Length: 479
Image (tube, rainbow, N blue to C red):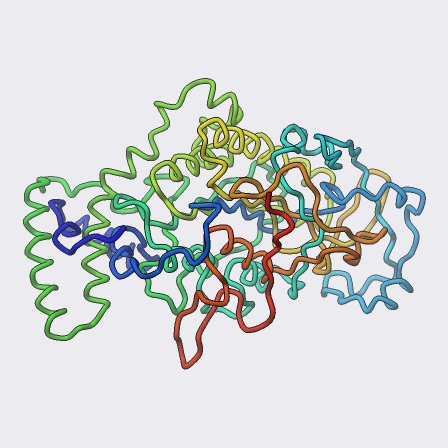
């Protein structure tokens, strides 16, 4: 849908608080009604299966061995030194384990059971996820190029380990435009974690930035504490009518400057002011969960009433989807278990397990799951050997880029299946490997975009989310 300039600059308002909010949007990107202009030519290139995406990013990398990649035969090899095996495999070691004299094999201490018609093996740490085994597709053959968190997170969020690239949400906003006028097309939520012991990785707006794409396509982060957006409230003593008049005058000056100079950033700035005003009314309504029923809160879990929790963020993601937001990314940190994994991984799983179940069931009962793609996963896997001391009840795992597990649901994905296989050590992939580039190509395909054709000219190169190396759509996971 494209809007004329007259329709776009409709009655709204401005003021000193508005200027501060517009500046904030300019710093972090704005991608709603303003992004619609010029987007009518960026139509889906193939029949889309999904209209929108919720990406649950588990920063720190969950252990595939303890959650989805069940290897029961390893239990009889407890504490076996894998030093020779790792050398033969050409293992890349991080600085955290490169000094170890031995690399004792650490099988999972958690029980697994088969669930759903597919018989998917799922850990006891994810009892709610197990209940929806027939709704999700578990991909056990993910792999990446990066072995440390910062480059790995940049790769999975932007398609490159180098900074300055556009994030996947920005690419979708650029390629498909917006489905709403009142909210950004790309929204970021930061969910809190409950464990005081979790090893929390630092992240930055590079993971949801627009890079070389115009700033209006960047993700806008809603805060989990305090005001959802800074400078959202009206300035005391300034009426809505006064704000509207100020904004109209400012827009007229900006339009004259744009006519004379033609700088697209002037137009972008006008769009940010308009979006800032609309968010003053749309964000408070969005974040007010008082109208959500008790049944919904029971579905997502008791902590869904507490702002900033994962369950609360999951409800927010559904509400954003209902309001036409194209891409919502929920970041949940604390998944980096180099030691005390049984304690800390159990806590992390408890944070997200029921919230994920509630989200999928809620989308399904509203008829939204079929055109909403949901992705769950981290940036790489964890090692089969223990980092540091190993006992029957305690161990840690280092980074492992050669294989890890994620799950996907909705958006045309066939639920109740497992895609890909790893070897008996959960070390190498033996069937149907899926690289990060393949995942990105598949996400774009689900929304009707061909990854080879979605590009943006920058520094003489047609930039793409999937880059210049080969990437394929994983068609085997679709229904």
